[in-house]
Each structure stands twice: as C-alpha cells, then as structure tokens.
Length: 66
Image (cartoon, rainbow, N blue to C red; front, side, top):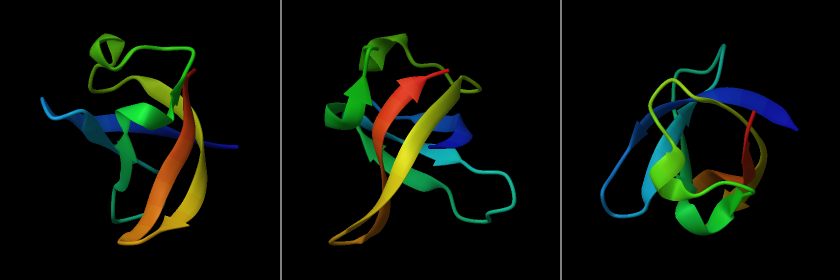
C-alpha cells in the first residue's frame, strides 16, 4: 500500500491523490473507495491505496481513508 493526500475531488465522482516525490497527481474513481464514502473525502485527507495501470495511465485503487 502507498500513502498520499487528497489533492482535489470533483462533483462527478472522481478525484486526484498527491503522492510525495511525484509531480503528477494520481486519478481515482469513487468506485475504488473502501470503507469510506466519496462525500466524506476532503482535500488534505490522508489516504492509502494501490497503484494499477488503467487505459489512460496509472490509477489509484482500493483507496482507504487513513
């Protein structure tokens, strides 16, 4: 598992996670959340996640609020 911080969330059910040492934020979709609801996420929240290769690049999966 990796750790990061919620960089931003959208009204469309997805958001981005900032990872230390990485320039590009990682995309995640609300369907990948575990043990938390999308509406409970706020910018700055700490999360844990796995990184997988998706059709448009790397994505965060199995996202949990830390």
